[in-house]
Amino acid sequence: MKKSFYIYGSVVVVVIIGVILLFARSKNNNYDFRFDKVTQGDLTVYVTATGTINAVISVDVGTQVSGIVAKLYADFNSIVRKGQIIAQIDSTFLVQSVKDAEANLDKAKAQYSESKRNLDREKTLFDRGLDSQINYDAAVTTNESNSANLKSAEAALDRAKINLAYATIYAPIDGVVINRAVNIGQTVAASFSSPTLFTIANDLKKMQVQTTVDESDVGRISIGQEATFTVDAYPDETFSGIVSQIRLAPQSIQNVVNYIVIIDVHNDQLKLMPGMTANVKILVANASNVLKVSNMALRFQPASDIIDTTGTGSMRNSFSGKRDTAVDSSSRQNGPQEAAGPQDHVQPSPADRERFRAVRDSIQSAHGGKLSPEEVRGEMQKFFAGKLSRRTTPAAPPPATSKMFGTAGKFGITSMYPEYQKSSYVPSHQSGRGRVWMLKSNGLLESVFVRTGLNDGRFTEINSMKLKPGDQIVIGATSNNGAAAEQARSPLTGQGQGQRGGGFR
Image (cartoon, rainbow, N blue to C red; front, top):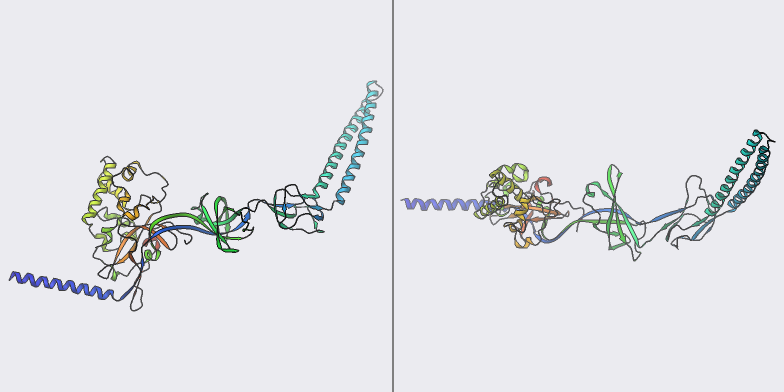
């Protein structure tokens, strides 16, 4: 009797399970999924901007005297040498000024000579007691005044000669005339400011791109970074340069603060011309041979009725994106992505427990076995939550952490990743967390938590123990009645914040 009861009971259980699976499959048949693949390759992040190409040294040549342009010895594109005559201002008036100054100087010399003779005569009479003190003092004063007038006349003559010399315009540097602003016969006035006659560029084989970068991106730019750009004149050709200067003075345009970034460029073929507009991409970060997924996959959030709640997946297979309840159940309060649903209560597999124990023992060993259980949990949280950086570390880790994850440590962080990811692993502080979805054999979706890195605007670098190149991940789901079977997910909660990209590779 009991045997029959167990047989009938087993049949009932099997039937119930079959009905549940059939219901799940039929429910899932109401949805069409869109898929993308996990890929492996290079990822490059740029900051994009526009700028203007200019010569490194450019001089506006002006005149310090007014007059009519009498002659021009240089034109557009003329190659000139320093000290070469390039223009002549009519000097008729200036020549007369020199002659007038010379005449005034001769007059001053004559007056000084006369006053000097009078002083000598008055001194002789005064020494003999034949003249008064008043007459002698007057002679001294007159002589000193005429001496000062003589010096003034000499200075006036020098000034007139200098102005006459200014009528001849010389090239101040070696270079090429890129602009001529005057014509023969044109009158130039230098009363308030020096008028520009020519613009000379020093060396067009060395150019620079002056670009403006938004304040939100300027923090990622540093001197020495590589930059590429294109110009409309050569749309199929890419030019390269190096960031040489980040100017501190802000430029406010329509309440948007920008900073000027200078990029040095070699122009040996003289294709680049001053004033060209450059579309610039500054390389701020790159990674080679890494796993990456479409940003659509990280933004996708399915409807609750197609999510697998049996807990067979992501937590037991990935430590890179989510902390397990066995580490610290209270840590789920740190963000919405850490309280995603019933899978939070899934117990880790025996293999995962073994990994936890290995990490725990390594932490205790690194600290000499002096940590309390609470301190151990805190160190494990840092390990699994990505507190250890993945690309460029701004400061050295604490000594104990260095021991645990150093080359001499028994359990380094790279030991947690598959072989094909270990070769591309580089420490970085730009890691975040995200989640992607995979279609299971039962027709439902399971989440896989990942650690995110670089983001170029289309793809995001990930690290995951479960995912490998070629794996199918879901990027969208639509029900057969036309409704989207996904919910909007905020990029701040649904995806780890890796490095933001300013352009596409």
